[in-house]
Image 1 (cartoon, rainbow, N blue to C red):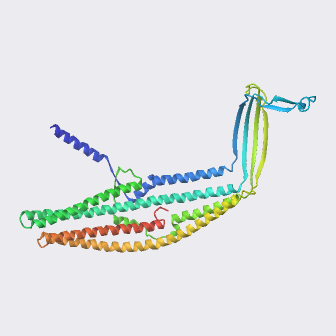
Image 2: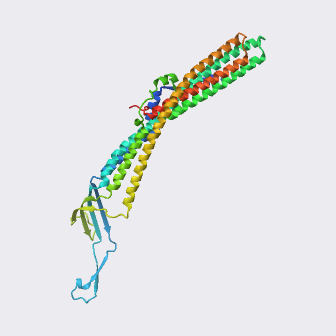
Image 3: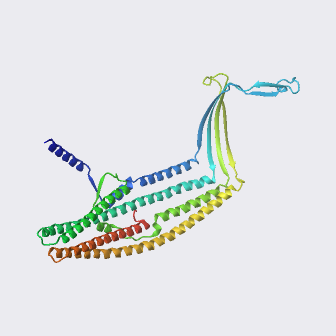
Length: 444
């Protein structure tokens, strides 16, 4: 009785645990939206934009007044000794005679307000332009990060949809084979068919079962990979609700202009940054002008009574500082030459990227045409293989078939299924590559 109660309680607890973890049903749009909000790569790229904004504020701040307040306190344990010619104090002193005395007070205190203002600096002017433009550069870099995340999510979702379809196909073949074996087993028990025939059918059933198990593992792995690309908790349960046919209907028209490509846009902005860098090196040869203002209070005491009503001596000064670069040992010339070389290299890289993108455009379009044609053929192929397999089962059921032929037709159907799944993968990948090339993955 105790064992019975224990079994009931265990079953109840297991049922609670199974219902406790809810399954999240997601569409492709849900998956993309979740990834754009939660994926670490996207979060970091957004932080990069904020960092670029703070860098722009930092550069701008260099041209604003720099104000500092300083204070100091000194206690001379040994006052410095000054030595002068004795005639400086006593005109009657002998020539060459010196006299020494301690100068200063035991305690001194100082408070100073310093204000520095940049008036003109060529590098600062360029720095403001670079800081503003770098913020735009970082925004494009962030878009690329988002595009990569969305690309991976779409690819993972499509692979999960294909894996789910593959599992459904494997399940259907297994069920048909199982029903055939069950029916033929009855005939075998009645002595109407040979043991060799039933063994052949059981062998065929095991093959379909193995194919079913493999398809199930592939589907589970595809869901886990989808969660990884989304930044979704790996131990939470999700399920997709869109079929490959639905996804194919919702894909973009695979048309566009490579000038919208994000990598090309980023490289174009990199060239612009290199132009700013060259401009900065040239402006470093210009004079710079700074202004300053200083107001200080100094106190000198032989006793520590700075807060008593005694004198503090003020000192105020302002001025201008002009710096004119004349000769730097050819360092600035070398830096300018390096900046020119960097600009030339970036321009060459941009030209090479444009050529590469044009090649990819032709390549991906050809791949899409080939993948679409192959997919259309595989649809006919799998339908034909399915019809042949079903006819062989019908013949086997009425005693006009052969178990070996059934197994052969079953293998033919499984091969057609694999080819169909492979063509579907190629078609999705070809469409996805073109969408990324034309920057069609992210919302405008």
